Length: 124
Image (cartoon, rainbow, N blue to C red; front, side, top):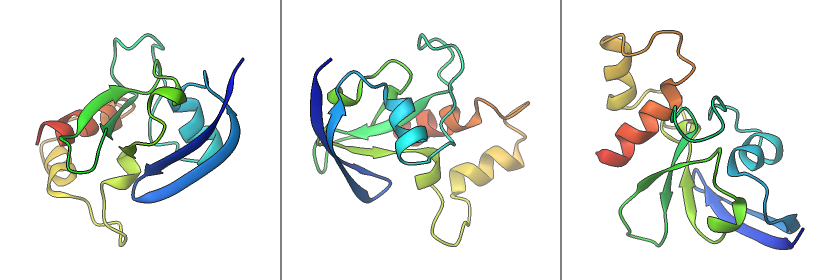
């Protein structure tokens, strides 16, 4: 297993981790290393989309949704990510998109809602 030095921005904050296993799944890095548990693991094969986060490959690039359950950390190293925790402002006020989900009852149990929010965020 190869180790790499991680350097990426998540929700506006830069994270660096030396000697990290390159094949670690992004969802595991987010939850275990950064304690960001809003992104949910469900099917593990990228079908349900509950694990969706938003990636910007370069500054100014269009955001794209990616599946954190099947993306190794090495593929996003040096890039910028946004998770569901990064949507609301620092006061915790929901964005217009989050409020629209609430107003329209656009979820059932809520488990996949973070992934749906992130996919919609990338589209907007």
